[in-house]
Amino acid sequence: MILTLKEQRVLDSIQLLMDSRIGVEEASRVLGISERQVYRKLARVRAGGARGVVHGNRGKEPHNKSDEDEWERIIEVVKAKYLDINDRHLQEILAREEDIVVGRESLRKRLRASGIGPKRKRRRKKYRSRRERKPATGMMLQLDGSPHDWLEGRGPKLDLVGAEDDASNRVWALFVESENIWAYMDLMGDVFTTAGLPMSLYTDKHSIFDPRREATIMEQLNGSGPFTQFGRAMNELGIRIILANSPQAKGRIERFWGICQDRLVAELRLAKASTIEEANKVLARFLKGFNRRFTVKPSDPNSAFRPAPSRQEMQNILCLKETRVVANDHTISFEGLIFQIPRLPKYASIAGQRVEIRRLRSGVMEIVYKSSVVLRLTPSELRKTIAKQARTASSNRKQMSAPARTGQPCRR
Image (cartoon, rainbow, N blue to C red):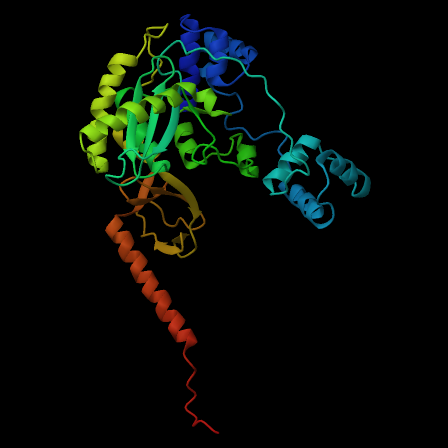
């Protein structure tokens, strides 16, 4: 039996619980489930071993799967006649006027997935309390970025992205040109290489981490929430992302930025750093001294970091991924370009099949079908493709705009 990375994370957490290294309450927070569910998973693992973390419905068709055609008809009716009505009232109107009986929660999810927002948005106040440190390293990393005039005008504007272990204060950080997804991919690659896979990340609601949308119908049917590209990569690695509701919730890494804006700026000034390469060299020395001086001893000496996958597997996860459907002529359209998939010796045809497009950190683009790379383009080959298709499009526009020649003399 092969476990997914997510299932392996659950199994590791239950094993920590069975070894009395963490309590039920801590396991509940790490896994994002109730204590009752933790007890149930614990009982299943004790009874069936690793198979106990695998859901019993894996691979089975849901018995209560909704009729998609019927839901499409309901959404069309709502868009045509019943917009700007709150969900509960809409449920009653559909039952009274259209003889359509649906659950309110199912209706709400379908409306949000179709882009029909709620009539009124309300935010419930939440009770807040002080959060204690995690007992073991690797249980949670706080993740954030800090834009600041780090070079004090001597060079380009830089952002500092960092991750701080909640239990020990150990910090990983990197100067980048801008706080984007590749910056955090590079940062996490450094964490995975030097320490391993953490169990969870605590972040703000930056669009890199927060998808800011409702789950699509397919995501709801698959039981997976909406993900950003970064969230998708962490989910594949079995790492849970926890979104903080305020900067104060990430107080430890916010205090680290205060230290950096005081001490690190001075170190950069003394080193006369004026480029991103020079700044990262100074940062490496600074972090070595910071981690030696300011890290604390966690209450549990055993690390919760998990072994990282191979470098190749990590490269295939820490990238940008999208899916496309292969046309009948074995081409796909991606970002305004047409890519021809060559003949595959293993398959007679893959027309109508879904392929995965990977955009690697190196700039290479790969088209993958059933775990096999069917087309790989380097950055120079991509530039040639873009230039060639741009010339073709320009030539076609000129031909369409040229006046037609009929061979007849022009009459005045």
